[in-house]
Length: 150
Image (tube, rainbow, N blue to C red):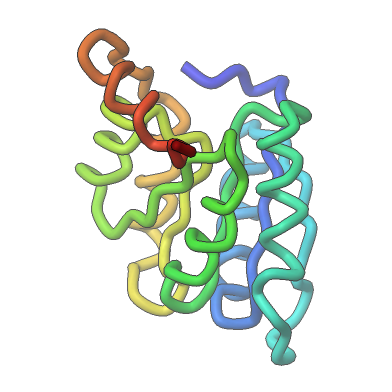
């Protein structure tokens, strides 16, 4: 269970701005504390500019978990996954949001702003925040994710 006293960074590009605004409003209303790194309008922007601050902060241990979005969710998750301590999961369903925490110990969720219903996105994020990593057999798999240099 995520400790609501902890801050969650959230960032998106213009393609997910409306979803981010909805989520900030709803999650804040549920008692979650968010740090909105932008964007703050529907004006066209480059998604990495708003994904890097979230991913770097999670990577560096400043925040335990984060939320990132772009229109498809793909660019956001690709950008975040460049950081060695980040495991960002692109999620389209409640089951994916739960399993990416249980099996992959994901620390960032990336719903696609243009392809999921806003209420489903909220449900996925709440499930993500309240699902624990199962550990056990999944640990050895996660340990194999980083690039092995020979």
